[in-house]
Length: 95
Image (cartoon, rainbow, N blue to C red; front, side, top):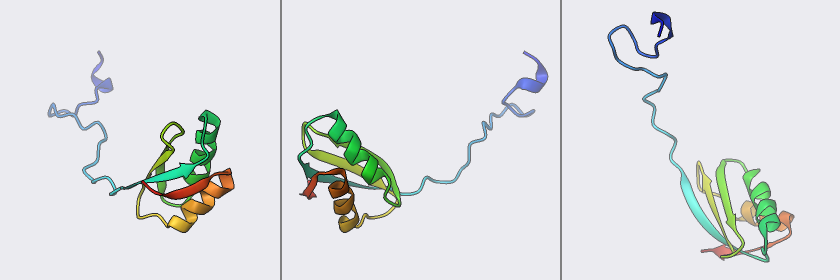
């Protein structure tokens, strides 16, 4: 290995470009959604909720009728309800 291609500094420590900043806190909420029956349903709900501001991840599960949402701050239930309705389903409440 040539000298100039190492990820380690000259003192032998590995920096790797990592920062010491903490990740932003996440808020997790599980919603119950009525009407999801298949993977297409899951994808539709996921797409609409993912478009909401602050949402970082969405996992819809048709078998349980739940949607797990991670966001950088608390979600507005009315916005989530609107997104679910836009996808063609009904938000029943929080699980």
